Image 1 (cartoon, rainbow, N blue to C red):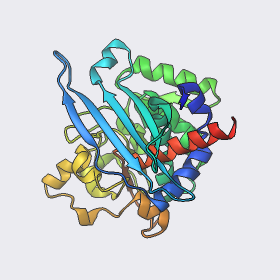
Image 2: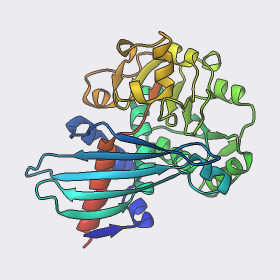
Image 3: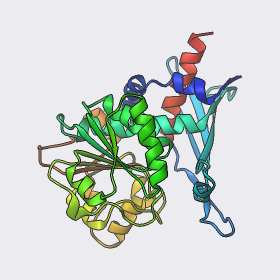
Length: 318
């Protein structure tokens, strides 16, 4: 059995290759049951969440992997300057159950999340989009410039976060790696000026208001993976052509659950899933002035895709 740590997993998941591999996986598909959520009370802090995310391929000559990701989300860790999310991925042979690898789940999750957003954006953003606004400054937020630069000519990156010190540290890292990055404090103005808005926060109340959205903008919502979390208000949802990573988002994501309960959004209003975009079953952006929105809650299919890429690359080097 292989043990693949964080640094090695990151090296084996180049963004260009991961986006390409994810596209193929979303087209081919795999078994990915609904994830298991378990709430964990933490005295004096927001509740934590344990997520269990299994997926597998049927054994064949060209496929045959089974995996499960175990994720612990502790929002209160932000006050300790610790990561809010910790995870591990276990990979098995789907024909025999033999364990093949243990992979650093945090790196796998962060890189596949950013790559999934970029993959969706390749169908939903204007081709001439250059200005990227990022809400958040955590692990996933820090990968979004690399992911979006893989599919668009991103020239200016703006970063907003409620924690300005954390945002400043992220901006410094981006500048050190050659990005043109600035911090913004006026969120409304930043939203109005952006071509792409990507939000990766643990917000429980909307940050992005629909009245701020300009024609042609694309909104990517990565946070709000439970019904009690939100990153965009009802008007933002109502004004947008909505796409999802999977239809599980309709009952898992607060950004969709609340508008559905209010009668603002229905299943029929959702234009399509990422698998449907990748396969060509549905079309993405229809015009330059469309306001598009992609809501992701994460899918075990993307985890298995990333884990299979890591495993194959590692085996090929041995």
